[in-house]
Length: 422
Image 1 (spheres, one colour):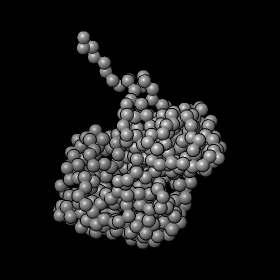
Image 2 (cartoon, one colour):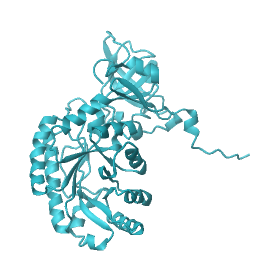
Image 3 (cartoon, rainbow, N blue to C red):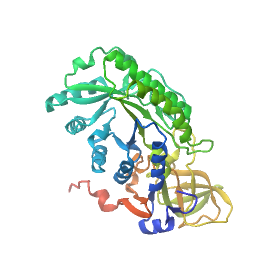
Image 4 (cartoon, helix red, strand yellow):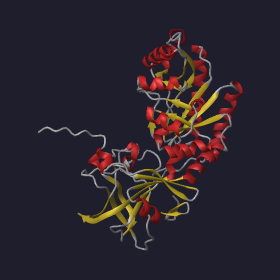
């Protein structure tokens, strides 16, 4: 959302009047700019996969696929979401450390590449493939022995539930010979998330590509696919800056080009979630009450951490605020410190601590938490106190489109079963 109180050409006041609050609004133009800005600069051999975990809304997925994104999924529902959004099987990869038999079966029936994260899972994939009379296409996820600094959440170089340790793979012997119904076809590594250093991303990528080559030679695995993960970050907090996409491509492209020259038939994959959708989203809440308590101002809103748990501070032991502002009007009042809280019966329901907002903030005003397009409601305890999901709206080509209906009492209770204990 821009500094004006609109998304594209649609005024925020119109959106909240039409769809109510709490409300997630996604700016389709910003999603498009994020994707194309990187796609146009990145080495053409690299395939950009959208990680649905960041925002699994089917219309968001469909928009990104229309731009050229593939799909990386981590559950059966995400798989079906990607399929219904139009993503073909050869452009989908399934990963996750705890895949069920049903999920594996669905992937193999659809000839979807599976990223395997343990020896036990590899044995199950082999078993299911044999039962189906097919050969599973499997990429091995590696937990490298090294880690690179600069990540908001490190996912490699330490004991992890993710992937197979590099040392274990080097000692594994003839994996292919032991799994007759599996075709091992490459490697994936994901070292962390929220990287905001172009240099670190390039270093990660170079080391993962080197790791894939070493493991491929040692295990006799053809490098049909090498997935370098991603983890490109979004700047949320003071002192952070967004990645410079031109500098990022300038550092990455020589690394990819050298590998591509050595392995021209290998599919190179980069996973992107937060980077593609994070900037696009605004979580809009309406102030219900304002009050003073022991010298501090509180604005109690109709939505809070039940919809936006990330706003309590990503990867931080102290509360750091996402960017927030008044959306529904322009105020000339001085900025003062406000605590913006939600409707939950817990003191932890604070989406903004000591936020600079106008002194005349009042009931009925709409406050927006910006850069909220990733890890929003689906990464939050939306059913706590039975408030349910907020509505979600995608603004694209000048039109505001409802892409998820708001939960109501009937939808919240529909899955529950009442027994008569009289």
